[in-house]
Length: 398
Ligand SMILES: Cc1ncc(COP(=O)(O)O)c(C=O)c1O
Image 1 (tube, protein in one colour):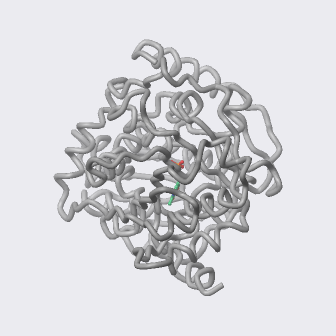
Image 2 (tube, helix red, strand yellow):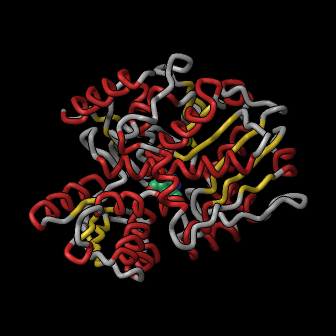
């Protein structure tokens, strides 16, 4: 895709997102595991990271590297686990230690906040967002560093541990007893009347710069991983999909490095919140109905982010619908790996990568659909640590 094509995609997204979205019922845990993306534009599709300006990866990466306390997160080679799963090689990028905030989200909101506060007086600014955990924690941290006030809206169903982690960083908590999408709409309305700066990792209109800045910040994770891999080159990359910002950023960074010769890219989603798969199937953004409830809390999203749309729907090779029953085993394989492999404390959302590989190990048709075999070299992301320690302990002991 050229820069012009991408711009058109952006405008098209804006038009589509402004209409009421079609409603789509959630899938069940018995749905097929692997889905090839029929909207893929691979080959002639190389989403241009140069457009829009907000997505300048190089600027974002340089800015974050300059922050106090910056250090790349580890990339673990897991050879014994690879052998157990019938793979040639396996690497896991471990985001649990990112800036002491427990997840890769620390690369997004703080960078977006820095860009949005440029030229403003932080002491006279309120940063706000609505979140079920990691994004809010990252924004609260950013606000404290910059000396701004922070208000975080908390939708229905978020655990008290996650709320406490946000409040501990000095944010004011606004409980909104609604599902995520509705809670966000309520927070936006309040922010407009109060003059707060909304820093959302979810784009609604197609030109939400905050969501674009978040994605630009996330690309540092892939840049680090590729540097850590050195000469080694993965054949397959699996990432978790919530509203799609993470997946879009990883795809854009892979394109930046490899162009259309990039690794086969699969997005993992929970059956009850597969809004990225369903957007690709419908050829337009849709809204998943139901409570979107999943153990993989970071992936509980009903609508694709407009900022992520062009990359995910035109760039992901495949989607994997992960049944809930694989989350615990994935988490435990990280916690108690075979051989001398590194132990990774991967939270429930993070465990989706390993859970997906476990599910694939028992499903020959799905492995074939993704071109996965004993020679495959796979990169996964443990995108959060034990962000809810009680829940992690319970699953790890299971
Ligand atoms: C740990 C973790 N992983 C993955 C995701 C999904 O990211 P995105 O919503 O950008 O797709 C989230 C979202 O909050 C998250 O917290």
